[in-house]
Amino acid sequence: MKMSSKKGKVQCIDDEILEKLSLKTRNKFLNYNLMSFLKPKHLDFLKQTQKFFENFEKTNDITHKED
Image 1: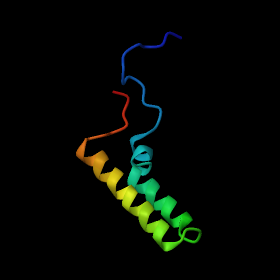
Image 2 (image 1 turned 120 degrees about the vertical axis):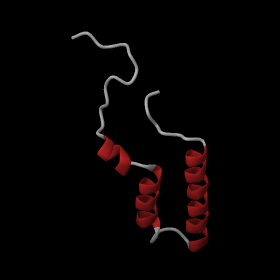
Image 3 (image 1 turned 60 degrees about the vertical axis):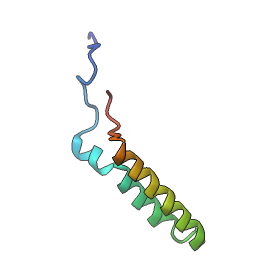
């Protein structure tokens, strides 16, 4: 089997799954699971940091695709 050298020819993860693995979704999962372990000030800091990176990702059009 010869592998294609062209970028973007093979997508290993379906778009539906990629959408569910978005940074925002992962952050919600993380927050939900850490809520009972972190002190409120640490959880607030985490949420501020997450918001910064979500905005950074959106502003800079970061898509996590191959190209």
